[in-house]
Image (cartoon, rainbow, N blue to C red; front, top):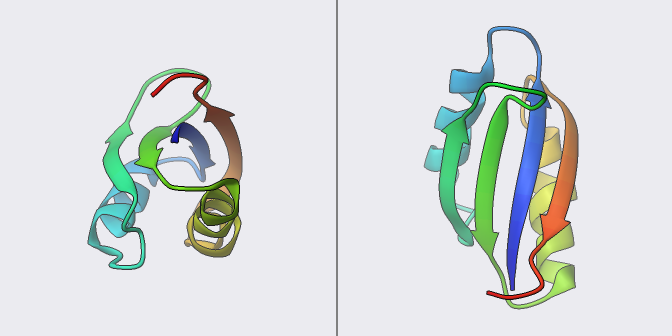
Length: 79
């Protein structure tokens, strides 16, 4: 299953969040993490086997990173 995690960060910290995501070993399903312009500051593309794995990745790991203030997850219908 593919999902897109849209992240809002504290102002000026999106690059720090991207670096933290890329170096965190427990984020095995992460395929891409980029800073972006627009409503969100970071977009993360993940591929996981289940909604349980996605939930763990999002709520127990990504949302607990310093400077992350909000996430919104989009689950792809086709991957």
